[in-house]
Length: 131
Image (cartoon, rainbow, N blue to C red):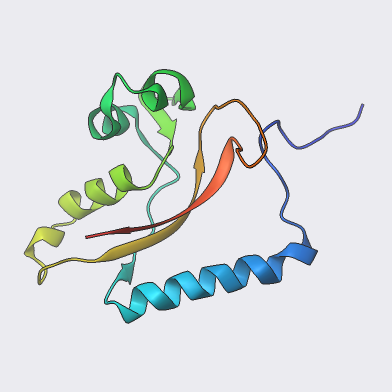
């Protein structure tokens, strides 16, 4: 039996890595130049975060999130985007008391159960900036 990468995902091969690393460096350099700091957020969060942050009636929440119950019975979702997790971290970690404005950037892998088509994957990469 042949085992393949799951539908909607792809390997980034060694022949592509230099281009990816260059794009990541340029993004990080531009963000840093404009006073943004890198933040790293969890790959999964409480499903409630996305229901409140993205909107519980949106297609992302209704149809596209990878959601499961953890061993404690809590509803957990793989992140479908970065903004909600950054805002949660900002609030949870008291960043409102930092000198203003707080500028944050991230480079994440996100997950959405979407129809796979050219240029659209279920696992994808997202750069983002939040102020």
